[in-house]
Image (cartoon, rainbow, N blue to C red):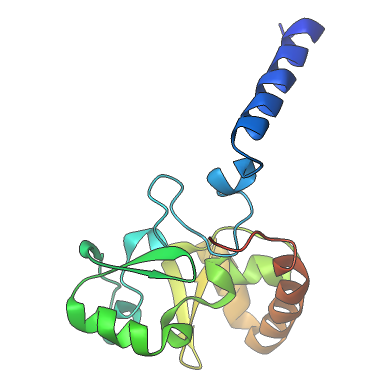
Length: 163
């Protein structure tokens, strides 16, 4: 049973962690970053190669030896050629809305997009939280995209930029 004393200790521990982290506790937990990253590695797209979404039937896992830091986020690539392509035009290959779930955004809230549930639309990469979110988006692409874009303008202003 959680007593008031135990509850207060939990709050004090949480506040202590916040103070010890220099105010970046939320960033360290990856709770509010503009770019969705793996909470353990800090790598975008769960380590998948962003360029491979465009060049292969299924995305390929990247490798640490082909790492790149762009906009404060680590990106992995499956080969040097894909890394070079990304360097020339990262805005094209990086997922839209920082990798947050597109349909969730159209509904007015943030979720992490799943790197394995995606769609290439208009030459851009969109991630979704779930297959059902993707299906719903595909049924009303234009209106859902407009809502997602408008909500992203508002919601992203409250997120922490990557360092």
